Length: 499
Ligand code: BES
Ligand code: ZN
Ligand code: ZN
Image (cartoon, rainbow, N blue to C red; front, side):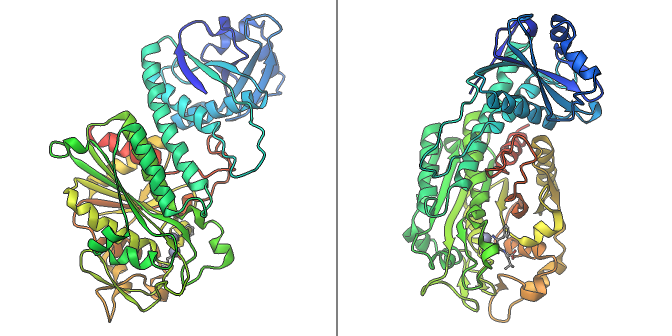
């Protein structure tokens, strides 16, 4: 769908439908009043009759019967006035355009929520409208052999008095939506298609398209780098591992700050010999969600072009069972020489991250942020709306929290008290990879301590295990798809790095 900013009077615009917005309790905003007047009060009549309460996301369709050039008006509820945030703007755009899609309309026009009232700047509202509209219309058809293409609106005109500011916001919103859509697609693909090699190919194709530098390390190069932890996990699979390295502003790395983003790329997690239950395994094609978030973020970053040297690292591998798979009680040596006693082969994620975090050191980074579907324990701690993170740096933590609030991809800092590391003490190696029964309590914090063995810089670790689930309640996160969590968060973090 094409989105553009235009000027003009909403009531005079020709379209299949106009979007107007209503606050719960009765007030039409953004020129909705003018449209209502032109319709001789047809909208207010329905509201006064009590037929439409304008809860956030509710829609009402009114035919204009020739009173204005547009054929219909779609009234979208904003919910309570004091709860209208940019997140509500995203959801409102998604609900309005989904209604237009259901009616098979081609051309929709509407204002940017909250601008006339002075609540939001034109650019920020236009950005949120664009994100909500595009992400709300996202579709994934999987591998169905016959798909009737769904009609989607072709054009959304954002009617505004400030076309320049709105156009800037629309461009930013598009860049965010395209990155998140890529993240979603990669997660949605089944594990027989999305192998480590395929993930690397996708990252490479994307990088070439948007002008990022890209390098893929194959198994032999990982062996040369002595990435024994990553290789230990990967050796049980017939699909060889790939280590993806994407770079934005590689040519300016000596002048600019370097931010490294690291995403877990386990393309399927069976648990290995510490086998998961069949139920526990059902969502594990999504165990590369952190890696997909980094690839999506790199795409958005390439388009928004912030003045930072950004490196995206995705160690990609499968965690399988086979005659050659790694086993509990093995001792692996990571690329910084640290030895790891394997307690659980299901704690594979931290082994991949260990070698990737060591690799990040070579960039002399100002900040490293890793993101991973790391522990079931984090889901118990914070549920499916908030992601917990750990950090050794207050400035990074503040920026991450800020980015979470801006994007509505919430994060919450959790403590890294030394006591959590007790469970990792090993008799045979420098550390265990999991606390076993002793490390079950507070397992997400124990995992963060494990990772800190491989970190020698300012760092944050985001455990996004709870974000795999999608209850479908957010209109711009359609239920049949992964949410694509993290791509907007990481991009916003990088943007705020230079602000
Ligand atoms: N991929 C899982 C974590 C996970 C679980 C993500 C459920 C999303 C939903 C990870 O590799 C894992 O298996 N973690 C173990 C660690 C334990 C063995 C220390 C866990 O959380 O049970
Ligand atoms: Zn696992
Ligand atoms: Zn895993």
